[in-house]
Image 1 (cartoon, rainbow, N blue to C red):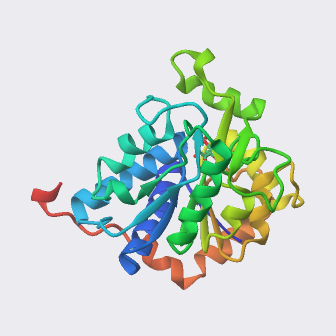
Image 2 (tube, protein in one colour; image 1 turned 90 degrees about the vertical axis):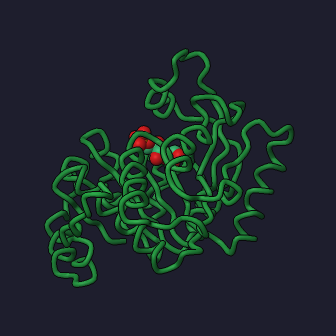
Length: 272
Ligand code: F6R
């Protein structure tokens, strides 16, 4: 795992967007794993701007989202399909047929979970998986006690997650208590993981995930044994990390990151 601390949320988001953009430029047929939530909105806004201003091309890219609420149809304003359409899919040149989320309204949810795993397999696996971290310590909706070998399945949301996400629902009683999520093992099989955490609310859980013991109570801690995982945090989310000076030194001295820190090239006036 490599931990990268940026001075503020804007710089953290910029680095994450540039890593995704570089992966897409290197491999236009990238299979990209996506996350939802408040943290990711700025990443999608930046990727949309890179498409608009610099022609970042998503036309051959395939996407798989981590999760979807059970019972919410695609057109429901709180469904994750709706979120993705709004924040990314409608703003870039992704072919909607290449975008995948579990169907939380499927009549047979267990079959839907198996189908989702099979679809990921048919796409050749996920090259780069974007992740956030929940206050419960979840990745995707893998709540505390999720097994490290868990796969895509229906889960009950933890109280911390219900409290974290209920603010997005106009009518709080309509918030589903269950979701379909990729499992911890499904995430661990992604070739590369990129976790973004911003804001002081994430400081404690991020420290437990990165520097605490590997524990089912903190599902994000499984990423400690992923062979290619990058965690990008802003200073406030990183504030409880004991090793932050070491992480900082490793990052600043690693030449591979220099190209991501160059100031963005000037954009022609007609493309602004
Ligand atoms: C949702 C997902 C979740 C979120 C996490 C953080 O697809 O993967 O794990 O990333 O709940 O959400 P925010 O960014 O709203 O704090």
